[in-house]
Length: 142
Image (cartoon, rainbow, N blue to C red; front, side):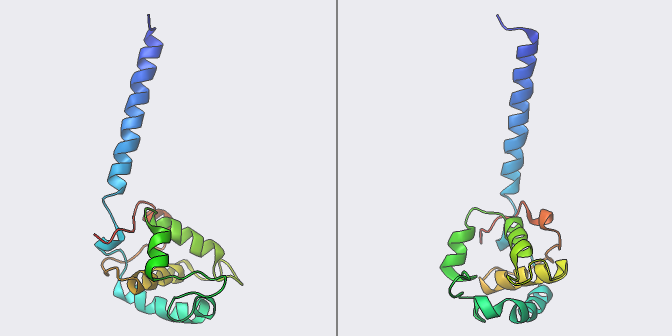
């Protein structure tokens, strides 16, 4: 025989799991293919990329040596099923390799916009400078 505490505990657990999975389902609704950066950001990002990133990742984003490709199949496979916010956090925390965190939040957002444009994602609304705002954005092209 179950006690009331166990029954209510089970109910609250099921509700919590339902809310959690409901939130995950909602997270899948917004994708980079919906247009999550602006053209202006991508243009600014091209300049920042040329000055801060291209020496390692190459001007065409193909990467070389220790610097991974930031376009094409390598990029698509690396970020498949991941969140845009994760890319933002990694780039912001590790790049440029010789001075991580040196760029402003806006410059990091611009570089990511440039990378998205280079990978064929459409422009739309401006990308937030806060990685948490992109935490629920996936990489699907839709």
